[in-house]
Structures are given as C-alpha cells and as structure tokens.
Length: 487
Image (tube, rainbow, N blue to C red):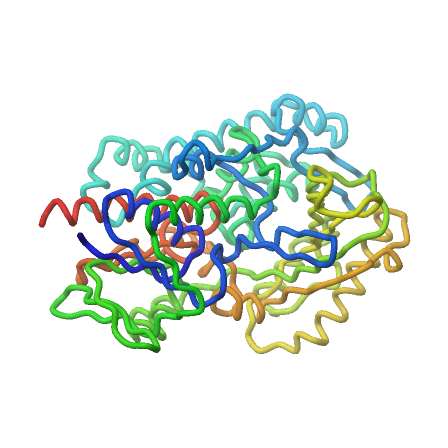
C-alpha cells in the first residue's frame, strides 16, 4: 500500500485526503493547529456561534461529491443573496433570480434590466470558456493545452476581457456608478483590486447569480465537520498539534517529512500550506521564493465577531455597506497599506437563517472589512480607530445606535490570521490577481522535477475560495492516479 502525507487540513487538504484514501492509499494528515478546517472554522462566544471564515457556498456539488450519502447535509439556496446599502441612502436587494435582480436594479438604479442580464450572460460565457482549463484542469500540462476545448478558449480570448480591468469592463458594460461598484466588489472574493484585476473575474458573478449562492443550514463549519468525518471513515489518520518541519526529497523523488519527533517516510506528499511558507521553511528554495515575492499579496481581513442585543429587520443574512469612494479604499489597501476612513463594511448574520446561532432577541454579527496585508503596521491603534469608524458608519446608514448593543466581542486581525492559518502576511488568498498574468503565475499543483510532491489550497492553482480549493484536490487526485499507473 502506498503511503501519502498531507501537510495541513484546510479544505484542500481534507479533500485530497479523502480522494487519495479512496484510491486505496494510506493517508496521514499532519496539522499544526488543534483542529481541521483552516479558514473554514467557527467561534463560540457564550451563547453566540459564528462561522469564523467563509460565509457563502457556491458549487456545493463539489463538496457533496466527496461525501457518502449519509454524511451529506442540507443546504439552502438563498433567494436574497445580499442587501446593499449605499451612502446616498439607496438600498438594493440582490436576488438570486436574475430576472428579479434585473427588475430590482431597474427600479432602484434606473438601469434597463437588459444590461444586467446581458452582463451575466457574458460572465456565463467566460465560465464556459475557462472552467475546464483554468478551474477544473491544469494548464501547466501541455496535453491539457492541446485539447479541443483549450483551443476554443484561446480562439475566443477576446471574450475573457483579460486586457481590461474589472472596473473598466464593468463601467463600459453597466455604466451606472452604483451598479459598477456592486460588480466591482467581486474582485474582493479572491483578495484583489477591481481597478487592477482583469475583467475575467466577472466570472465570479456568474457563480453567484446564474448558478446560485448557498449556505448549509447548520452553518459553514458543517463543511469541515462532514469532510473530516468522511476522511476518518476512510481510515485517514489525523495528527493535530504536529507541524511538519521539513519535506525531504532524494534523487528527484519525495522521500517523506520531518516532524519534531523524527522522520516519516512517504511515497506521496501533498502540501496544503501557503506556497510562500512552503518554500521559505518546508523546502527552502530562494529562486522560487523570489518569483512568488514578485506577485502582489492579496488583501487580508479585519473581522469583529459581535453578539448583538436586539433584532435588526433591515438586515438579511448578507449585507454590504459601501464606501463613498471605492477607488480610494483600494488605494489604501494595496498602496498605503492602511484602512481608508470610510471602509466598505460586510455584515453576515447567520442567525437570520439559523436562530440557534444567537440567544432569543439577539443576533450574531460577523462584521468584516477588507484589510491590507500585514507588513508590520501598528495594528492595535489601527483596529481601535477602524472599530470606531465602522460603528459610526453603520449607525449613520441604519439610523440606529449600535455601540450599546454589542454584548460580547472577539477580533480577528491579519497577524492573527497568519498565526492561526499560516497565510503569510495574513493574506487570505496568497498572491492577489492584480495582473492579467496572475492566474498563469499561480504555482502548479505538482513539481516536474520532484516526483510525488503535490500542492493544494488557495495559494496554488486554481486559487482561493472553497470551490477552487476543492478543485485543486480533484486535480491532484488525477495526477496521483497517473503517477501510480506509470509504476
């Protein structure tokens, strides 16, 4: 029986463990923290429960294909995905039904419904042209580039909008500045800047509006729990609180890993850690590290977990309070490395759908703003100021006093994100997509020069976010099958 070691138990690592175990491979997972899931975790503050990381699920079938029938869990498709609040007092409900969304935008923003449906149709075209090669496959392999669908992608490259920024593409297609801001926001789904990232990222709106946005009925952490249960059922062994210190290779093949307790041999090693950290500590490589350092890091997040007294009918499960100057906000994030004094605020209230997440008469507010990568800023002072700015902004836009309603609080900042998840600089997605070549520059899921070494997770191909991390494990699964067949 072949032996595989998975380094890290984020969703990519869990999915890889499940897939390799189903191949009949003996799998050990070594995780430096005390639990699985990486960023898909939860927090409990007294009677309040919070999803600590991602708060929305797209392509749920990618989770369910990993699970036995009895481990699958109910998910709810959101009829209303997000409530948007603008500084001028406009409030807009982004419905999952495209026709209803278009009518809402026509009524609230005076934009003809056809503009939105046409935009989302173009986003669907981008998905059709890119998903097989850039999401579910590896363009790092020549044989994939020679497939008929790949040729179709290259012949239609003008339909990918790769040579325009997302903002300029949105401005050209949609025109109305509030609507442009709404669709610019999708750049933040992988920690990027809409004024720099290519228009190809319009594809994210296709996933959310054309294919659907979902949430597990018992919360996002259910994904982690079910994947871990499935791995255990298949015989995967987890070693929590046992960090891998070094990956050992010999004669162009992986040999195993070093722990504090000694060396563990392996035929296969799959890394689910930040690729920057991998090449700086686990398999030091200055040349590859220098290449990674040339890429701009993605943004991070500052999150306040607030147990709130009272029920707020203005809010739904997902709510966005926009900045009055979006461009300046992103200039601060990526150039100044600071918070703009009028940040866009995201409020996620899972107790709107799962009342057990908060006591009677209360709500659990996950309050997040985009944050710069950690480069040694004075976070204590920055957090103090930005907390005040957030409260003042929400109070102004909701017309309610909120500071006295905060019953309990915990804070997650970029330095803590690094400590808890290993994401270098606290960057949630490794490198940003702030260039048209970002997707091409992401690290491949394998090494040509080291047989048996593979990579999954948000800092490698195809990128960050739940579906993409799961896709990285699917790609590795196929690569391992090929490797074993050759033997």
